[in-house]
Length: 482
Image 1: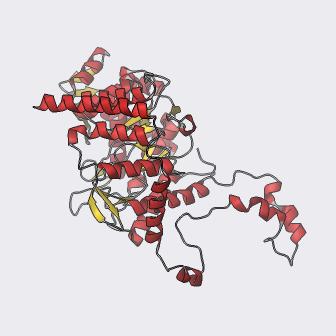
Image 2: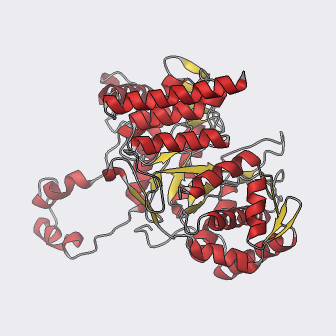
Image 3: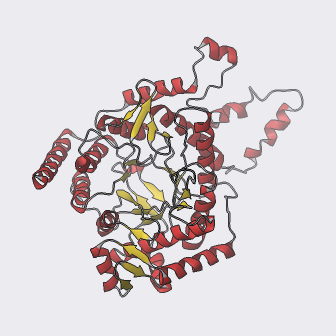
């Protein structure tokens, strides 16, 4: 998973076993509510106990489902060079759920479809972002019921990396999947063709909503991965106890896993806890308390050490409203804790401000450097060969020389980390160059990156087909509404 010799662990192996047993107790005795008739029918047909909308799970139900889940799977990009193997290493996913966008030129404003396109281009251009699509910004200038269709079209047009979809009504979800199949030369999504995934949030405590379930079902039927993402807030939608909230999240994920495996045995599922501690002053969400990783690292340990599942964690959040010191230290705290906890996907970590309400163009570039710094560190020291110990060079230079001009230095100098937006010059050189701060540098970087991006990554003929598909789908929705 990582080349470092250790990862952060907050509970012991014996505690993991106890947490699992306590989760099974809640699943079998309290159950989980499913607000979806099809899901309830699936449970009934497979012999699970169902009382109204509450489903009860036995130990055998859970263990059978876990045994069917792949520990790794290929999440494919239309460009095979961008395909990733989930369950190994680190992969970066862009943010999801922001309403506002911000840059130094225009300030904070509602996001538009143009911002959505710009962000997809930046993710495609990025050396550290591996997954695209999704909902990094909610485009306010598109009618809400049409947004998922417009976003999948723009995602297909501007990126060929593995994609994320969005929760939506069944007909909309099915249409987005049909559009992706059209872009894949008409080849169906299926057991060995995982191109798009979706994040599914339970309704903590212990429930799933109808639209979330219908989306999960559509994805599972086509064997597309589902990231089960409980966001319990300790003290509000979860117990004040950190371990109690971890158990609640585990129960919700396990219940969702059982449903997925009953629909399509072997469908990939990602264990994706994103809980936090509620803001007890306001009753709202906060994304940067250190306790959140005491909760989520416990869950990640269950997934990695007990269940052997692919994992994801939110890692780059800050409550800061602007590019300031708070934005830096909260983001780096969360990135480091998430990555050191062993999550396979690092989420909400590129550009986030204001508790995931705002995405910043400048911080998008700054956070990519933070990720590069951490990837440099977490790769550890993989080469422990005699050559890597450089004893020959040490002895050649001896006591009075310099390594600056030694051949060993020239051989390896380009392998060392270099910042993309930070300034490592002397004070005098920095001042002579204009004394700009990191935000100004990042502003120039995102504009430069956009200028290098092609206007489209798909052939003109496919673009016409997708536009026609989009027009028909949105027209049907307008006629249905009228």
